[in-house]
Length: 166
Image 1 (cartoon, rainbow, N blue to C red):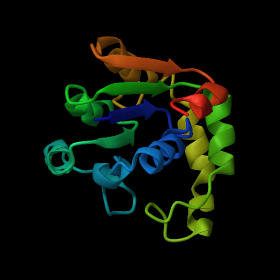
Image 2: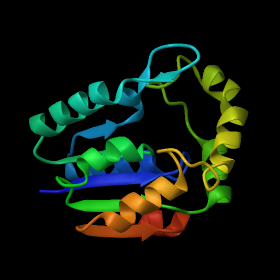
Image 3: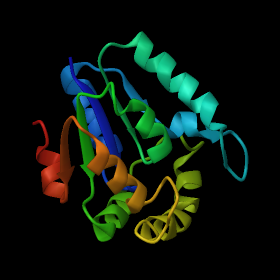
Image 4: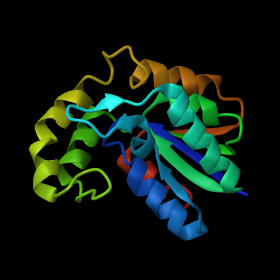
């Protein structure tokens, strides 16, 4: 009964790994980006209780799953039912390279052009990972990872991420 929780910076490889694990183990996959934001421009976070309600509905409807995101506040809700926590932490340069190579994400952007138009803002945001102090920061991810009592692993390179649970 695998229940994977994947966390890390944007561009760390969470979605790629989650997609692979979900396909291999035939698991439902939840990208927390789909529950964390209101559909507004500019984007604004949904109320935490609304996102938590939707996460709990997903986990109650699915015995096994893979859930990925960069939101320590939402990920903390999932820490107890998770069987494995993987902290993807390949470094800022790897995250930026991954973001620049990212395929179109139709569940997030109306077109590849719209996604590409957001790329430089995303790269700047990725660079701020170690200096931010919010729930999307390295500090918050480290605290969540360090406090997790179950099976956990920190993956610190693109190769380690690619090899995880092959």
